Length: 298
Ligand code: SIN
Image (cartoon, protein in one colour):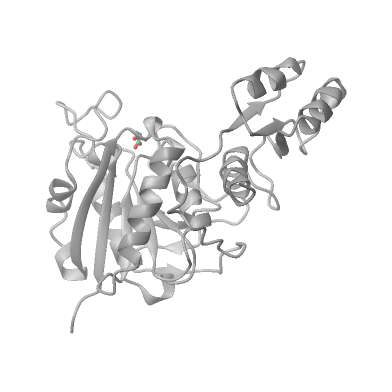
């Protein structure tokens, strides 16, 4: 029987990180191994799938920008459009994975599986987690059940949706969580425990877009100056997410500045800085969605 054909797009991160010491899990260089070298660390992948490989970037994901998301979305869409590709796996740094994954979730047409994966320990570390994460991600991308669920994230044996996946710890292997909903399932063997809670995919036409609109996040602390809003607009921001205390509660001292910013044409949306609202998006995800909403208005 023929195996599923999975296209791997490598973008860097700790999963491709290398250190001189097997016990160093913090001072290594992310984005060092090539995609092919990464695949070569996981020989059992050949039993699961026929793999093709693309080295799109080799970055520490702190240096990803919306321009990189655009390039990544185009590369993923080009792969998905090929009849001979059954699914796409993307390796990515953990630090901004949830932003890239959610952007792709919003702009790619639903259908064939798209699965992000990553690692918390570099490839050179004792008990590196990247090889098993990659194996799990390819297993999920091969699964017929993963089709149509939107972009998924596999880390530490769990499957998360891109909408829910949140990096909640800077070093632990179980850094990714899905607050409130819990993970979508288990990666090996792929087991889906519930259906994702997600809106309809937008399938935005990417070819005509040169750059994404600038949207910033302002976290409002007790006593923060409302003049930050003007400063933010002064940098050219077309949209701002206000990460507000508690239940997205706006301090009275910010009311006039918010009304003025909106009157000046800046799209200002609010989110809870607790990052744990079951009905709304975290500030990071709200920013990604506002970027795609502003695209529609161009
Ligand atoms: C990165 O995000 O590229 C570095 C950190 C990581 O992948 O864990």
